[in-house]
Length: 176
Image 1 (cartoon, rainbow, N blue to C red):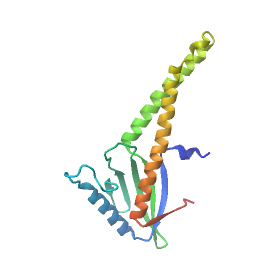
Image 2 (image 1 turned 90 degrees about the vertical axis):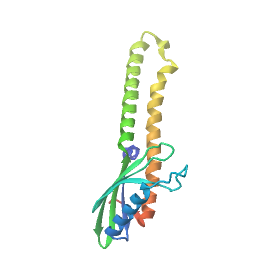
Image 3 (image 1 turned 135 degrees about the vertical axis):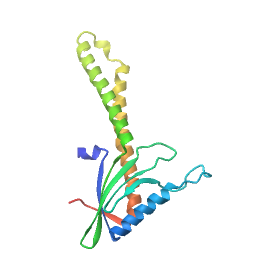
Image 4 (image 1 turned 180 degrees about the vertical axis):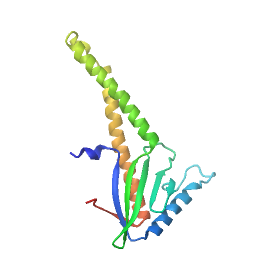
């Protein structure tokens, strides 16, 4: 199994017929349209809202959170031209606040797991009945956050990637 697939990082290359200038304009329009939200609507009906910045040959955008909080993807990209086609090299990863939360949660639950393992190893020789169900909680918390992070980020990055592919009229190709 490829362990890299379990990390909450996604690296993709897109190829489009649009010029780099047109790509920049579409991304700027996306950011401009995302800034304004109607105060009269309870729910925002636009599919995705983004914030960030677009420079000459690079961009850094992230989804704005909507009603429910999920793992949001931050997209950093470079735009270049090769053989008459525009290439977009994108890296998607969770936004900073999500990364801090995930790391803190995994460190705390991981330390608890290590502590319980050391305690079980030490006490099992004297007290075989020490294995209680409360000792399983940190392991379950660690597993839950790991799985939640992987699945949540993969779903979010897939949504953002497909949205950008449609917006930029692009297709994905291999990194090789």
